[in-house]
Length: 121
Figure (tube, rainbow, N blue to C red):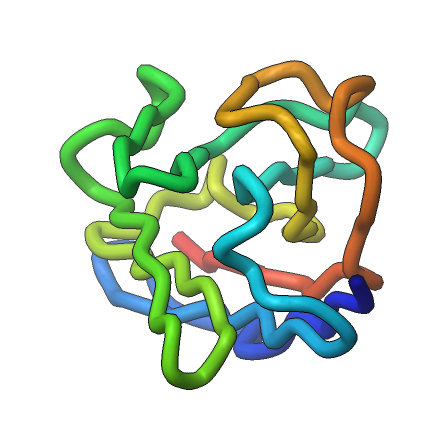
């Protein structure tokens, strides 16, 4: 499966952005999907995941502010980000795993190219 992430940009703190990850090649319903992010000088970290049965899981740092969802008709997974903070600034990546769901980046098989989110204070 090929993944194409989009939707990043510059936003003021407190604002909202919606990221999209469009898939081609195979239906996303075969995979657990996840969003990760990597800030400058830091390691890639888990943000959110959604399973093949639509169960979701979030990092504590984004819980209550971010929502992961999937549109089967569009074969696209989304990350709605509200109440953005400067510390959310990072390159965001979507990824697919053949597992039901996991927070470990090493267990994801396919990755999108990343989209930059910058949050100003």
